[in-house]
Image 1 (cartoon, rainbow, N blue to C red):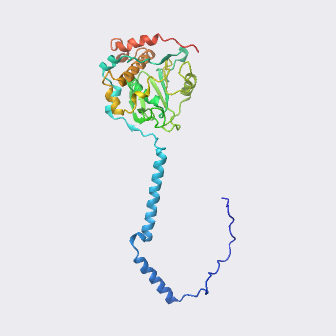
Image 2: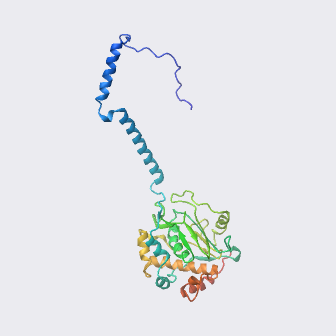
Image 3: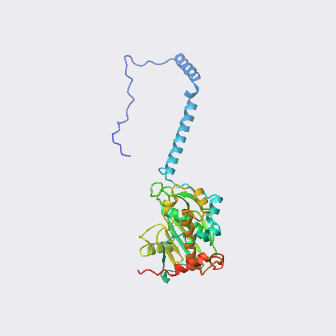
Length: 322
């Protein structure tokens, strides 16, 4: 390391200055000095002992390191804090009462669906229609959409290891209660699901997209298929339909906890229920079109006239020019 101040050359230790030169110490004097030091050490209070000071110093350093780690993990109070979803919340979202589903219908929602050209058909390695989601944990619009997505996709398969998180505390609609797909898994006999949370709550890189998903995202996350280029969330349903914009405004969930949102889903007249269940029904109908009305327990006219009615509306959507 470069020194800003040059070192002095090594030489002899200077002789102590004083009125008289230093005198040699006799053996008797040395024994007396040693006894005095020993007595002084014995009379020290415990907190002045070398052992106590050493242990205390180590403890202080350890506490300081812990504080530093916590501050770094906190990310200025905006770190991702993910906890498992309580079963009561999960059940309310994944299995809303059939009476509520039918009473809500579309919930008066626009659906925000865009029809893809036939060339955009998207299937997984096993030939099943693939649903692609690209979003980020900090994103409040993704936070709102995930409530819809968990309800919708649970009709076709099963999630494992979903966690609760909040959207960014510094973005619009801060701290929106939601879920994360990061580290979660999904299985279905009818569709494949590629979930990509590409940034965390601090907008740092998180999940990596496969080449296939990256190509789809780059090609279709642009007008006329989405409201603007590179927007979150991006949702592609089997290359048949795409989400033009977020299904509903995150402000609907402002200041509500996970339990409060879940509790509202049993009331078909609540605005939260209309937006979450209504949009889940629309995305369900779009998926039924992509799967050829499979499974029958979700898509069949005899099972759900509500979903079939929405299907007819979606089939009338024209493919945008572009």
